Image (tube, rainbow, N blue to C red; front, side):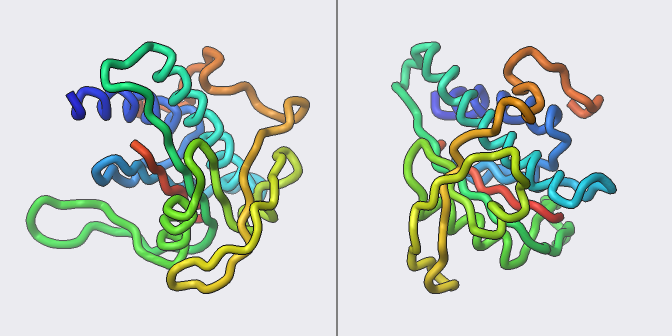
Length: 187
C-alpha cells in the first residue's frame, strides 16, 4: 500500500519534472531529489524553475489529498538551496547517479528543519529566484553543519509574471517523459 501511494505521488512529481525541464536525481525512501539543468537562459532561470516546481509539488500533494487516499492525508516539507555540486555514477554494482556538495547538504537541512506544508529556502535562493516570487522571512535557524542561517518560506509566484502552472493542463516540454523533497539549483 505504501509503494502504491509513493508511486502515485512520485509519478505526479515526475510529470512536473518534465514540465519544468528539471533533472530527477533520485528518490530515497519518501524523499524526492531534483536539480535544475544548466541553461544559457537568464542566470536565475534554474532557480526560478525549481521554485515553480516546488509550488506545483504542493498543489500536487493537495490534489492527491483531495482524492481521499486510503492511508489518510500526507504532508510534505520541501527544502531548496542553490550552489555548485559534483555529480556522477560511482561503483561497479547497481549503478546509481548521485550528487555531492554543500548545496545538496543545505537543501536537505532546509527540508529537515522546515515546517510541514511549507517550502523553506536559503537567502541565496531568495536572491537568485528573481522578482517573480514572494518569500516570507522565517528567521535565523541553527543548521547542522552550517551554524546560524537566515531562512525564508517560499509563499507564491507573482501571477502577472508567472508562467502557467503545470497542473493547469500544460504539456511537458520534453519527450522524456512523503514528507520531503530536496532541490538544488546549479547542477
